[in-house]
Image 1 (cartoon, rainbow, N blue to C red):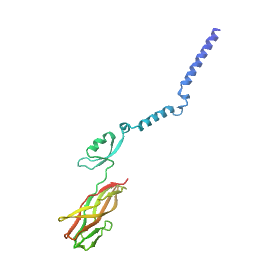
Image 2 (tube, one colour):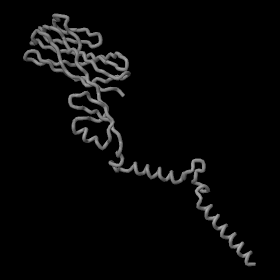
Image 3 (cartoon, helix red, strand yellow):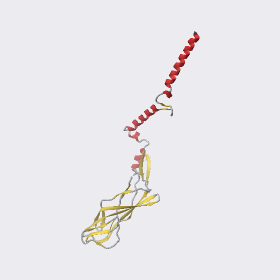
Length: 230
């Protein structure tokens, strides 16, 4: 009888042991991915926590380790586009760098030249940047053929195109008088050179003359701003 009791007690202990083991085993849990051997419920919870952390207004937390693009302008060297850590952005901005990629610089090759003129009365002279022709209006006398639109060149990466920001007016001096060039127009051509590209920008406009303007050669020198189209 004692032996039967002992066997019964042993069976009960074994049943309790296997019952606890089965309950604690992750392989029988509905969250346990048997194929990949991980807890899918726990991973989902962690993902939700990360999302909530990124969505609040803790600005330093949002940008920790975040990269930003800047144009770095070292003294006397060609500007470079760099990706830097956000935490160093303020330092770069304080010494003249700016956020975003570097924009190309346009170099003037020729000024906007209207040639030698005589203006017995008010009128204007126009330089067309597309066909590079010169046209006079009023009693303006054109004395020579030494005229042309302004010409700029820009070095680009292959397949890049540019947008030109022109001045609304250009003031030029002739003797004691300041004259205005307005109706500024532009024309751009591109030439591919291997992996690089060169843009040539022609700028024309209208030179407005009064009756008191002296005879002479009129031309304008100015700057334009260039930005690369995205």
